[in-house]
Length: 353
Image (cartoon, rainbow, N blue to C red; front, side):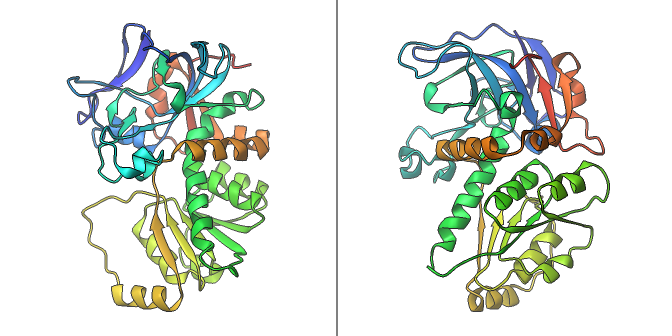
């Protein structure tokens, strides 16, 4: 089989290579790849800035945004050949810590988790892969190739779940206005879920042209570009921050409404000094009963919530989020940063039925 692999830490090492077909362990599914989403984490790994190969190996099979079709399923697995599935990314640590033992490996306390295609476990960027049924999520056949959006949607589902749990600290909290910063795949899906919840949604991004403004407006949300001062004029009850950009984060925490919640879902670059009035931030946060929290990854319940959100979405709108589909034979193009890209997908199988 063909697989996209990389030597983590070595820029320019990504390549398409032949590997032996995987042999499922007892109870595992054998899955034929249909599609693979490419995100910023993949680009970081390709550029040598991130990622870990499995112990004792030099190369990592890339890819964590999966979609595949079950080829073989053992009795009692709960799956059948022909079904579309997505594989969960993170696996619990071997200790396990209390969070991992409770099925919340996204909240791992000791950092010993592994992640497919990212940290010490081969990913889904191969023509065939195996999957423990406990980490397989069934995709509605009606969603078809759009099921490749399930992993980024799971990140969004977790963020919104935690916003709701924090908001429930008071019986009277009734948010009206949400701001999403960043109109990449996670930001657009966050805006989609906000609209599904009946919120007035605003999206702030740095581009004026391309598909993003129209995608946002077709959700019934407002699109803003460029100037971060717009955050102060919006005064959102909820901020879903997806950029990791320091000026955006600073404006978000300064201008959230009273009783507001800021969800930080974007990862920032390290090592840059930023002028920050910590005293003023503390004063506003304390006197405003505000909450700022970070979130990453997702557990199985979030994948299932994401599947429900995608099933309720307009499929034409979801399809427009995927701005480039690249056949496996031209896989290198998927790792090129191009203007107008929202979500880039590598097609392993042209017929997902």
